Image 1 (cartoon, rainbow, N blue to C red):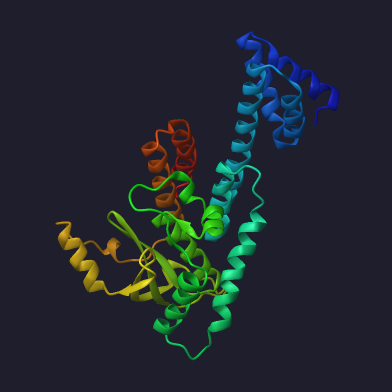
Image 2 (image 1 turned 45 degrees about the vertical axis):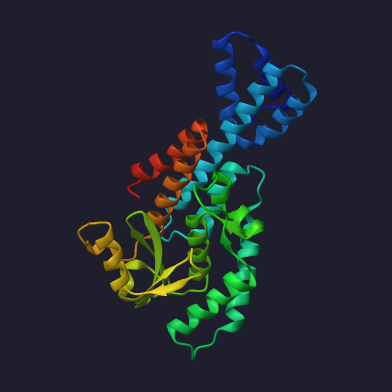
Length: 295
């Protein structure tokens, strides 16, 4: 780690109008990682120069983005991709000062309220009725707006705070809480629509619910419509209306990494719809990493 004096000297050089000098210095500071951010923030506060302030803001953002991408890569390389953890990492892209523990704490509160109402004698349908009652009626989660959702409606910390979210955000939160309860709930990648499924599974030694352990799907769930239960026949009807040939992939549970990719693609689309093209390009970095790692 550089000394405090060396870091301060590098930060001072950010004022240099020579592009080559600036790029060399910013690269050096960026290589030091998030530990250099407090010094950069202090320099920003003490400088009246708008050019310098903008350079510092951009550098802080790039350092934070690099750190978040590193955490996302670590998540992707894990043997099991816990959905809430992945969503918390992505939320830090928009809310850099976010403490992920606040997300876990609020999700745990929902999980606990559902768990208290469950017992071993309930059928799968009864379990989901309890889940839906607590999630939608007691906690009040609902779709944010009709029409194209805003990017902020996707971030899970916002959804937990406001009780409103984009359809995909509601779906992934529902999925994350269900999986934290060890319920066999999975994502289903329907064309133009994302739904969930409740399946019968054979647990492995680690008791982790995974799509490859599914014996068969018992029923499907629409997380945007208060967790409404529906059958395979209704998917058949939906596919028919789209004038598409049925495929097995329209009915089968997918890995959480597939869900994450769909979620990021919809978030990126929201940024494009709202003309926030820089943010859209940065979401591509997450998607490119998933492609590189075969996720």
